[in-house]
Image 1 (cartoon, rainbow, N blue to C red):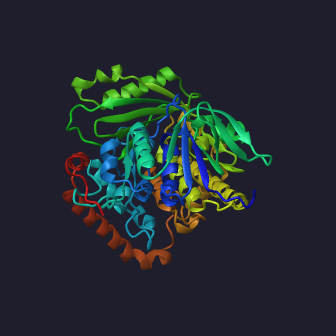
Image 2: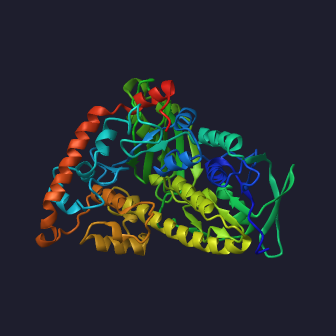
Image 3: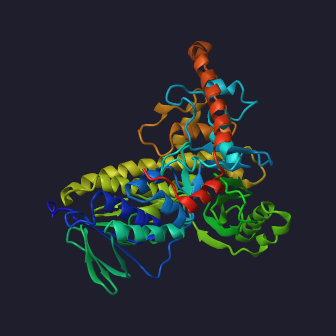
Length: 523
């Protein structure tokens, strides 16, 4: 078996994880040609995707482009809008004016100079994100990251997307089956059959019979049918670090067809969690993720409806009481390993943490990319690839956990046990505690992390740290004097760029409307 070539891939489960993985592999390995890799996706007609995530990371642009997706078609058919970052409100003090941005652009001059020490001298006059980037100012004005003459996937300001997860799955299904050669089977898996060496040999389905493959990809969501249930790979619970275990989600209509579309995810702190608010063309996706140990469903729903009510005009406030709310249970954590024998898990079957910072979808993209890029030629090579994959993604999950927890540990809120408990040392990972000790004396920078392709680079840590009011001890004058002029020049460049872009970019809604009418220029 070690010499057997890997030519047939079966993906179990659809949704965003299944179809993104199918599309990435099929596009790179020419599944639509007789000489290519065979890619089959089987999903149950009885199980609907969870579809909790509506935010992406900028990597999605590259993923869709590699799959041959037209950005115009994607925006039109998936109710997609442009996302330029996240605004965190009421995470520091809980006051009405408490807010900071985590934009998607790097700080001005980031490759050459760390601007934090120079900004801290003026921290009382300007927010860190505004001093080093223009994107917060674009978001405050609901501006788009490009013009209607900017080609597909190109940008003026770095961007990701907000989208309708259900429509995205339908769109990917059509693209993968009609253009990329993915075989689609709607059926239920009734048994899993093994080789004598423990590999999965085939799946027995209810109507199609036996389905054999060389590599099986588990995209069955929280069920984790292959990796979790069949192979009994343990689940590592992280609820002692990330407390949120329940979400309440709903769709909120706009007051009119001309209502502004937010250019960013809005995350607003609550008593025992936070509310997300995502703008799509025809509605907002709003939800409350919270810790059931610190509040109950009824209280959380009251907070959610109060948030929605406060965001509506006086004549529309009754809408908040009429909206249907869907409950989604969450178990924060991940599998002990993600690739075992000839089975690899992607998406919720590998794990989930919480909706903060769109980490779920970016892990799907990164997993699909590495599987495709390092697709083992033979079964003998597969164990080497699996070992590398597990090492890479255990590192990535740990770093994402650190980054998400960072949002909580600097809060000054003392109004509930939830915020107080999040600052308890027993809930903070050792690695994050070490970095926090380090950052008291120097701000996050390139060499603080070991991977060249970090999910969240040191710039992201800067935005959160200094947005939350953290302070790093100023370096000695001798260490920074030579860079004073360079720093001031970069601050000035950012200010000039901000003024130019604020004047020259359309609103998010205007650009979306233009794309619906005329489309974007294709490269």
